[in-house]
Every structure is written in structure tokens, then in C-alpha cells.
Length: 411
Figure 1 (cartoon, helix red, strand yellow):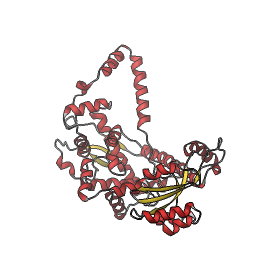
Figure 2 (spheres, rainbow, N blue to C red):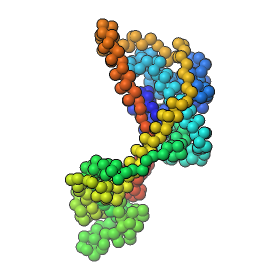
Figure 3 (cartoon, rainbow, N blue to C red):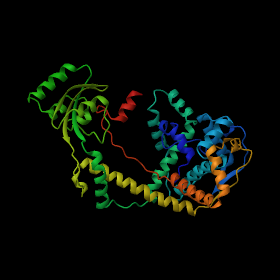
Figure 4 (cartoon, rainbow, N blue to C red):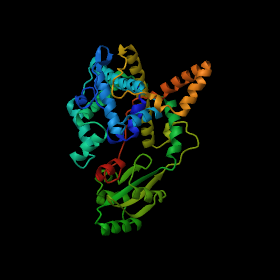
């Protein structure tokens, strides 16, 4: 699978941060081409006989220019020069994007992989929930240079790819050696991790919280039993207030600061956050072994996280290998770029001095030119290869103050 420089630039501008599934530009199913001037008609490429319209590619590029603020020739030419691109390479990378989408659709159909509209609805509605109103949601879409119909299409492609990967890719099971190797690598990162439990009280219930804290400190009340009886965080209360390891979860700042000041078995004072009043107990501290020869030397939760990481990596590798083979066997035809597309311009005016020096040097040394070109091609190919990997994230309960729940609450 490939990620173009154009898509990377869009992501840097905050597009993929605002939306999900790496949403970029306009989908081939969108009819928004009517809003773009300078369309030429014609066919840009075919994928096993299925056409990708030139106007679809042009619309994508023009929408990107609009959303990124490169509507005039000066800013557009300057941006392309900074990215070591020109109109032809921009078009090629957008075509690659649509070719990838079409290959996923065709492969899904061949393997009887389908996505129901209700599945797309669920993803879209979950994303919408991060915004205060439909106006805010529509504004985010607009700022990303897209609309809800296009976003839904991108979500569908993402879900198709996930399901297709599960169907066609046959990942290797993680070996004990692989797991031990990863455990050695992650042990350093986990060193000093703290596990904790908490009791959460409503913000206005400080008197009760102080009474419970005093009874815990005097030994009259067991912390875990107090969590089951008093904590408003029902998810963790059932487990004696346990919220897991800080290196595997994201807590609100007040919680993290208080936990950092605790040693094993120590109990905090009253800690106030947006979720209420916490009493926190550090229940364990992980010290990494000097040498890890087996994953079993790490706590169970770390073992599970590492095993998931290795499994996802193996799945990603297996799917990438399958996709590359599928792409190589496809009949992909790319036609020449029409000269009159609206994003085309003469790039000679945007050549930098370093480019000019390079050109002069290459004119006097043909051998050096060939070597540099070969090196540049190799580096470019390496930089654009990216595998599609699904990230699995575990978050705690709302009262625990994970980053996901905190973000949702703040919106």
C-alpha cells in the first residue's frame, strides 16, 4: 500500500486528525465535480477495465488546493516545489489513491466481503459524537475540504479494507522468540510504570470523601472494600477501584500528578479533577529486569499489550504482501495528463537555486546525474511504502479519566 506526499501533507494540515480512516479529498462516487471549473472530461486511468474519470482526479486536486489555501498559481507552484513535486506527479499520486480504492472494491467483491450501511452509520455517528452540534460537525467536514457523503464513502473503504484483510491475509502466529524480543524492547519503556486504584466521589461530596480517607488511613476501612461501597466509578469499583497501569492508560493530569508522587501501597490525599474527587492508591510499581528472556517476566497486562502489537504487525505485513501481489496482477492503465487541466502550470518559475545548481552539475557530469536519479528513485519508493495497520486501544472507564473519555466529555 502506498501513501503519497500529497496525502501526507494533507494529514499534516490536520485533516486526518479531524476525521477518521485517513479521509482525503473527494471520492470517485461524489458528484461534486460540477462545482469545479476547468474540467476536461476523459479517462485518467482504468483498473481491470473500470474507469477512473479525469474529472474525478481534477476535482480531488482542486478541492485540496481550496482547503489548503493554494488557489493561486504562486502558492500552488511554491508548495509543489517545496514538496519536490509537479502537476504530473501530483496527478500520478492522486490516481494511485483512486487505483487503491478500486482495487480494494474489486478484491472485496471477489472475496464476497461486504460492509452494511449500518456499520458505516456506527462509525460516522461515533465521530459526530465528538462535536457539540451538527453545525460543528459540518464545519469540520468543510474545513477538511469534503462533505458527509464523501466521508461515508471513505469510511466504507476503510471498513472494506479491514474485513478484506481478515479474509485474505494469513498472518504468522507470534513465536516465543519474537515475543521475547519485543518484551525486551518494551520492558525499558514500561520501567517505572505504576498500577493504581481509586475511589471517585462526586465533586460536592468532599465531606464523605474526607471521612472515607481518614478511615482508610487509620486502618478501619480496607481500600478495595471502600471502592466497592463508595466509588461513583462503577466500572472500576467492581474490581476494588483498579484502573490498571499508567503506561497503558491515559489519565487526567491531576490524577497522573498525584500518582507520580506515590510509592507502592501509598494512598493520596483528596485529588480533585473534572470527574470529581479521587482517593488514589498505588498498588504496584514495575521495575524492568536487566535481561528479558521470556515475555512471562512482565506483568500480564504488558504481555497482552505486546502480544497484540506483534499480532497486528504480522497481520499488517501479511496483508501488505497479499495486496502487493494483487496489485501486480491487475491490469492498470494510466493515460497521459491533459495539458489544459486547471492545476497544470509551468514549474520553471519555482525552481530553487539548489535545483538549478543540481541541474548545472548534472549537465557537466552525466554519470553523477544517473547515480543521483537512481538514488532519488529508491528513496522516494521507500518513503511512500506504508502498511495499513489497525490499532487496538484499551481505555478505562469514564470516571477513570482516560484520554478518549476526556476528549468526548470536553466536547
